[in-house]
Length: 464
Image 1 (cartoon, rainbow, N blue to C red):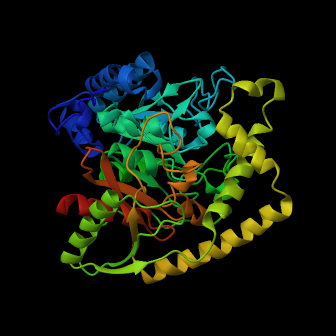
Image 2 (tube, rainbow, N blue to C red; image 1 turned 30 degrees about the vertical axis):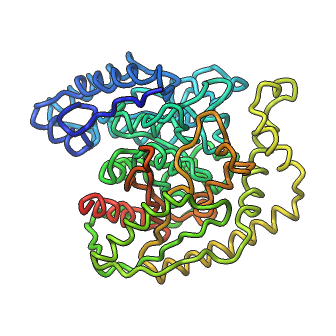
């Protein structure tokens, strides 16, 4: 298979324009949201046969919303600076009048009657919903394939995986089928596909973006933006963030406001994390990340080696993830389970065998680990690491062929620890392997420092 031709630079394709550029063009009446939505719809249609990023492309709804956005801009009354931004939504969040199947054939085909809070906020800001993106069944793994939807493929090489579970969203961002792409991340599901597909993805501080209904995977699950640039990720995060009384886990406290402030690379205190808690770091991936860290040192950043606290993080995460899978499976009648992904059934069965005492012990260990990571982010401004231990591997597999690994968590071990700690973490593309596959840098910040993480990425984009 040949790679899909990606748009090359701003100006070649309306689909490549960022949120800020679109708002300026709409305000000047140089462009219409209808033109942009139509271009993104075409892009989605053109690329979907080869890449399978979309479960549903909403031509009628998107063009209707785009015409309404056009009328608001012509009156000089946009709902926000993101009014008219083409947006995709993962098949795991509720969308009014859309069928949401969670990547599964055993869920209801009845359209939903209400939006999830994040979707409501995007709709209220004037975002134009153009398509629904693929996910593995119940978002359980870090690659995107399912019996219901098929295999989602990497735009740089369609024989390779897009990553997951927000694989369709990452592909949509990479090919220019929209500006904003909503993803979810319970163990790396925003960051891994963003890394594999060469785009930017942020797992925000937990509860920054309200969630409803609550995820079966509990408080490791986050909702966040996937975009082509850090600036667009920040614009999308601003829209989606805030309090929603349906999300009890947000609590009564307030996270720090999202402030757009440039960040100077000189003098930053950086911890460099290179030893994954499971699996092994690919040598070529490690060398590419090393070069970016060396560049930061040349620009005046102070970099020190950083190792995670000595905790069995794989076992700790599995207690949370597998018991969540068991809770989700319990909602499905036994007679309907034969068509469910065998891997999901396996982890759910393991989770069902974990007793209450072991789960409570895991929750205590998680709190201890989280406190140690909060303390580390008092010493450092950011912790940097490779985005993923490996480049994208063959599509349709859960682990790289011949790796000897048994589950996706073993090669995703730069990702899931930060779900346990609930800190913001983002990835950005920093180069290509010799095979032409993207490599990403991960940036972890203190809880609440989402804007600082994205400002760091913006500064890195400029110098690179």
